[in-house]
Image 1 (cartoon, helix red, strand yellow):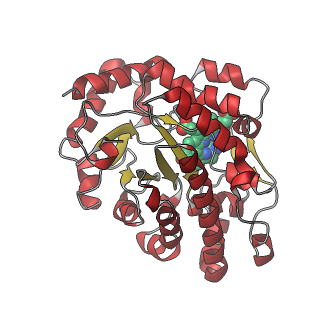
Image 2 (cartoon, protein in one colour):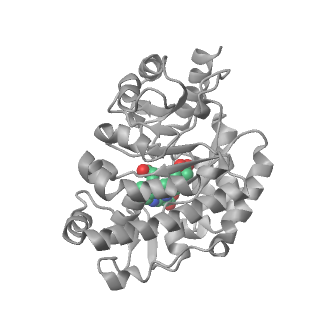
Length: 335
Ligand code: CP3
């Protein structure tokens, strides 16, 4: 939390996007025979799975185990998470009539989140819990495409073809996302991350005109709590300044832009999170250390640095490589 606020730290803190999940044998064991979305609705399982990487790797933060589509499921949309595929929506959202299915999220729709966050903060003690949600654009992409998409063609067709419907869709998603983050913060989350994973598909101009107002609405809705707000997307080198301006306190950076250059693009005053290429963890240990040193060197003059990967942990990553990486960053940055 101190790094997120640009305050002095005893070492650079480390956590990993997707630190809970298939890279861990203990995760695969507890998830056996339980569907992804069902597991997200069981506070006992959410608590166990969220704690697993904290116990194993000694990371400096836990990230709440859930998925970006959980609030959409909670308001009654017919969607599922297919193993190896991702979120799949039975009936895509493409018309004005479809919008009516996106009703507001009430805190009571996600009582299991409140319960799990409370259980977690009790267990975690001083280790912060990061809550999260999907940003309006990335959620819209799944809803409009009906599933994962490489080119986001239906999404862009709607965005350019019916700007008014698009703006209304993003506005509704902003309210749902804000409500979902509020539930997590009010139950005890110490920070939140807004994942706009696929927004790198847009030009800066389209981002500013057609997406940023909705993301800003989300950040504004949780500004009053004073918890750090992290914003991350993949392939967002050209959007880093805008992601910060949307209202984030900390900007997450993928591996394509070095952190010193990312600092120039975000104005130099914001702490950054990132950005080791997750695929580097498949290289020999000496190479992992060399690439980690590069990240740490590029972070030297930042106002704050939270070490992370440039995107989520890949499922076949050797868990021992992650444990070593945490230990290595702590050792190299001890002050
Ligand atoms: O440890 C953590 O980071 C917390 C858990 C987490 C999950 N999803 C669990 C999950 C988080 C933060 C997410 C967010 C999420 N979900 C994002 C944003 C982060 C990113 O990667 O950019 C996105 C785009 C999704 C949508 C989604 N859900 C995808 C692309 C997938 C993977 C599909 C697959 O199987 O390869 C999912 C499913 C999912 N979410 C899994 C997990 C652990 C795998 C399902 C399983 O274990 O059976």
